[in-house]
Image 1 (cartoon, rainbow, N blue to C red):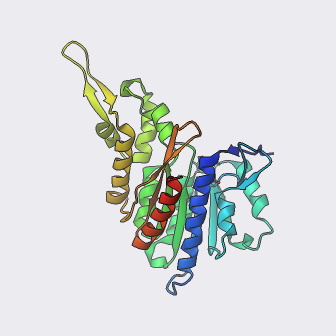
Image 2: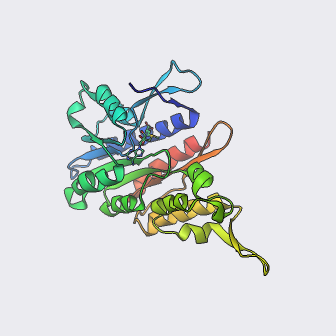
Image 3: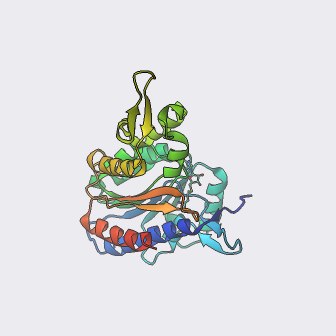
Length: 279
Ligand SMILES: C[S@@+](CC[C@H](N)C(=O)[O-])C[C@H]1O[C@@H](n2cnc3c(N)ncnc32)[C@H](O)[C@@H]1O
């Protein structure tokens, strides 16, 4: 039995952003005669419903269920989660719905499942398109996955860049005090260790060995650097400024990135991000 997870206001805002974009996305793609299908891929899907932190009687649909609830449906849905109980819960929530036949549930690691079972069906020659949501709790996305998604040229992506996990574990103020295994997790999502040279500066004098100290504007540097990588290395032509998601106390949780190959997609996403980011 799955204990319901409680979510705060910023998670509700993220859900709203994805929901609004998904609704606009299918509305546009249903008019494109060349398009042979448009999928929704929730790679870190979660259980499909939560309760509100402030009022545990208020049930809130998660991103997979919101995607099923939009007016113009996607032609296929892929929900991936590594947790069996969450997949079971999604199964209960989706069975019996009119869209059930188009829903594919995948149990396992999103990085492996995307590359093996889903991306091959969305190559450019397929004339299919997809909206892919990469929303883990922490540093669970591999750069190779992001790069493979970018290279398809068929997908728009929302991506959670987990600043809190990075700052608490992988990239501490003095790099030498971070557990190297934690640093490796950041290298895995970043694709190489160039984040160290960007965000840190060497400090020391003649009498002590030098250490790497994080620059004051470390978060901004990581944001700019990752945005550049999405464009230059993963090949997304359009990556608007992400929004910073914070908790109730103002603590920095993550950057919500959007990446696409279409200018119209960027315009729509940017307007939605700006609207909610300003709240
Ligand atoms: C933040 S939740 C997703 C919430 C969902 N996007 C929503 O807003 O409704 C992250 C989910 O990722 C799952 N997860 C963690 N690591 C994973 C992995 N390597 N592959 C697939 N799912 C994973 C967790 O079990 C958890 O349910």
